[in-house]
Image 1 (cartoon, rainbow, N blue to C red):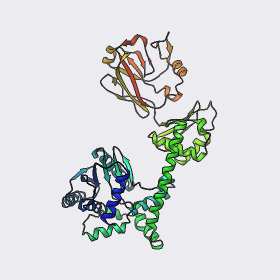
Image 2 (cartoon, rainbow, N blue to C red):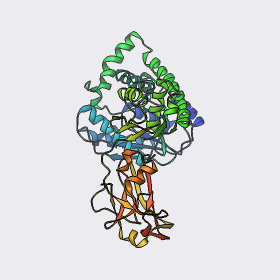
Image 3 (cartoon, helix red, strand yellow):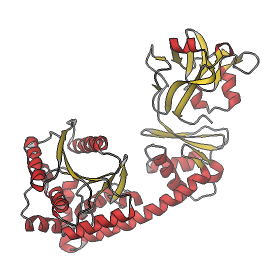
Image 4 (cartoon, rainbow, N blue to C red):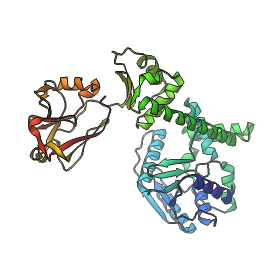
Length: 441
């Protein structure tokens, strides 16, 4: 690898993606990130945008403070602005600790990056090969076989891996030819970690038999990435035909093969911000939920989400228990009130007609159905049982107990943003806004 090759790849990425406003190198202090920073800082062909280096101190090694100082010195030598931040990582199992460190690190970067920033990490073809092998051992599909992406949205910034096509030997040769110094993390030699076991035990044996194995796996990841992109394009089209991510038409789904249905379900969950269903749950949805009778209410659950069928639609929902808010919490015009996973946020906003301002100013207590509730809705004659109103309105059964009720003392003032009690309604009052909740219909 040469600086010219790296910078040529960066320029190719800039040509097809929104141009960076700043390049931010994630500087661990190891060989790969030191090489990446050196190439960007010392070449006249580097993109003409501000360059910075950021180090994250996880505090997991006795030498963590010394590494932080070493990174500061490296950045200063290269003339690059530098900052370091410390994060707290829970000390659990080895693999759990590594995952927690990665989560904390990227959460910090999301906070630090500005719109238009590119976060550059030094993942290379060897890392890609290890990721591919790990995903094979997990039984991953096309998405897992695509491995690490070269360019990805990252909050309001982007995460870019310009060394991804570079073999580790090329990076090592660059470091030697430029006399670079770096720190060695002793945990990288610990074969108890799955990735280290692959790096030190498996990959060398593959290379002994197939010297181009790393490059070949990197090419396979690129091809799998192309296949993944095509599947996402198909899923986008199917989602537009089937409805919305959390509410899919069973009649439309019935026209497609099982593989196409699974592709859409995974995609719909991603779009809805839900964890994708594992293979077993996907099979249960196909065999128990989709072909169920119209009057059945089958449920398939997995960690963080569930799938339900009701009146011709498949619902993909966040898993949540009973809808509750802390006792004594009042909704006032001054604030929004989060209600929990899948329950959205409540607020009061001025409108031409709404809740009596005096009642709103005093604060409205939030509760949920207990049974027997009734009110006279504004614009309708007579008093109606809430149970009957919900049934007539066609609200899905599992949401009927999760619709927030607003009380002034013991008087029911409003049923979320669905109905307002006539005797509490005033001109220039406060309308209830309930946003971000799971589908009601």
